[in-house]
Amino acid sequence: MKTLITLVALLFVCKSPSEKKLTLTIKILPPLAKIFRNQPIDIDISTSDFTYKSSVLVPDSLNLTFNLKKASVVWVTLDGLAQYADSSTRYFHNGARITLSNSSTVRTLTFPIDCEVNRYLGGKLCPGCKTSDAVIPIYWGLPSPDLKGEIGVDFQLGGCVTSGCDPTWFCRKDTLEF
Image (tube, rainbow, N blue to C red; front, side, top):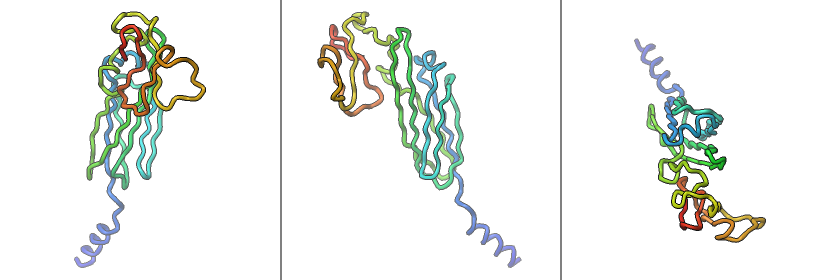
C-alpha cells in the first residue's frame, strides 16, 4: 500500500503540464458569405510555443480545435481579400487575443468584423449618388513619398490607426466615406 501511494504521488508530481483545449469557430459575416465563398482566408494562430498558419476556403463557418501545452494566451489573425461585382477589391484584417481557461476555451470570431462599412456590398459604387465617377480611394497608414496625385482630388488620407471597420472609398460629390 505504501508503494502504491508513493507511485501515485510521483505520477502526480511528474505529470506533464496539462493541455488546454481551444475550439475556434470562424464565421463569415453573412452579407459577405457569397463574396468569400471562393476566396482564401489566411489564418495565423500563435502562442509562445505553437504556431499554426494556413490559407483556407471557409464555406460559411469553420471549426478548428487545438490542444495547447503551457499556453495561456493565443493570438489569432485572419486576413482576406474580397472581390466585388464591379471588380474592385477590398482587404480585410481581423485580430483577436484569446485568454485560455484552465481546461477548455470555446471562441467564435466573425470575419470580417461586423460593422456597417464591412456590410456594404456595392464595391466602388457610392451608396449616396449611385455612381463611381467621383469616387476616390482612401489610403490608410503613412503615405509613401512616391504617392502621386493630389489629396482630395485623386485620393483621400485616412490616418495611421486602423480598426477593421475603416472605409475604403470616398465620394467627392456626397462627401461620404464607405
